[in-house]
Length: 180
Image (cartoon, rainbow, N blue to C red):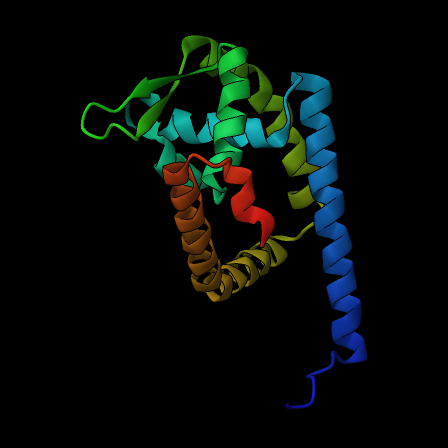
């Protein structure tokens, strides 16, 4: 076995600062949406994805892929959005196992109400402290990390989806797919 590639002191500091900053940013945005709009960030992201889709509808599998979420986790979120009257599910006529998530007018109205405060929170906490050059660098850094992680995450997501489908075929709860 090869020797671990330990982080240098500078890399360790950057890693810890990055990790703390992303946790704090996510917590801040989550709190802002909960306080001002009464919804978690996950629900907001689902509403945004649907609002940007043609006819404000996406197949559940496409929505899961777009949100980088497992199908079972997304299904739970959509069920809560349905209970709020913000999303409805429609059966897919060409695939008996598939369904569509459709943004309702009430859901679009909730998104329109939540968006200004959320955008201001993102601007204030992420972009206002940065120079234009730092914003460009952050974009480049984010793209590089996404490019490195996307194939690994896609493989893991495909494996999880296969487990979920297998369990569904056996009539088992999808949560068991995450047990490994």
